[in-house]
Amino acid sequence: MNSDQFHAARRYVETPSGRIAYVEQGSGPVALFVHGVFMNGFLWRHVMQGIADMRRCIAPDLMSMGHTEIAQEQDISFPAQARMIAEFLDALGLDRVDMVANDSGGGIAQIFAANHPRRLRTLTLTNCDTHDHWPPENALPFAEAARAGLLDAAICQYVENPASARVATGIGIGTAYADPSRVSNETILTYLQPLVSSERRRADINRFWNVMDNAQTASIEPQLRQLQVPTLLVWGTADIFFPLSDALWLQRTIPGVKRLIEVPGQKLFFPEEKPEALVEPMRKFWAEFGRHM
Image 1 (tube, rainbow, N blue to C red):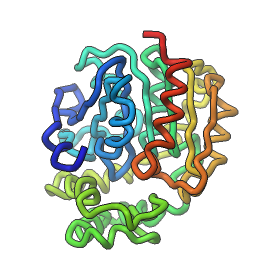
Image 2 (cartoon, rainbow, N blue to C red; image 1 turned 60 degrees about the horizontal axis):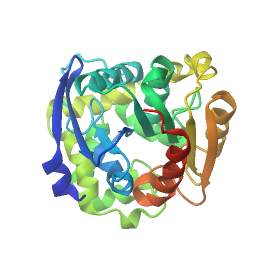
Image 3 (spheres, one colour; image 1 turned 60 degrees about the vertical axis):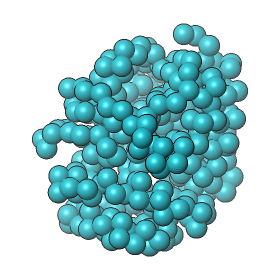
Image 4 (cartoon, rainbow, N blue to C red; image 1 turned 45 degrees about the horizontal axis):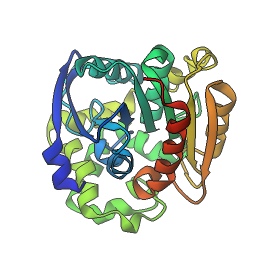
């Protein structure tokens, strides 16, 4: 799926939280993919292609990102995002899903799992926000820019010059890729253009960072310690944001964790950059634990 196909495939569904944009591919039991900050459902295109023969893959855009439309006063905290996902599933008439998440989407997925364990057949977490271990130190430039109301301005500069977003330091999405030189301008624009396409959206991306609070994930630790949902952890070990120690904390905390797969040399966005590192473990995991409909 290239950018044009992604845009052509986009659908919308109305929920109490807003008009949620999503794409889907494949058939079978539903797998729901949750992206993180700056990104949208396009992140999952290669992974979805790799499992479309065994799952109906659905990738929504979170509130304040991608092409999802929300009201100016809409709550966009992590608990609100998790609530939106439940509303999204209701709107599509979906009961149980295999949930797959990355980055801040992983923190949101943990909150969803804590509050709606019966709606999950399985849970797969890749490098993501964990307990009180975030925002990570290397993300502080983003947070500081957002607090100053300037993050959207930096994104506008990247939209004007996409190559500059590949930088491996400071405020640039290149920090999340093992080889940012391979990320095309088209891909960068697919992620970043929607974030600054209007004054409302420019305000929302600053607002998203300003409502980040690790108390939102730390507070669900008791529920995570009771979570029996079969859980797979797949972790890039070179990530500068979410180290392997976060995966180890999840493994110790969630009794449903069945497997931890390390992906050497890979960073935060390895599901896009090296999709086979996620596709192959998920196919095996679902064959073993995802049969219950």
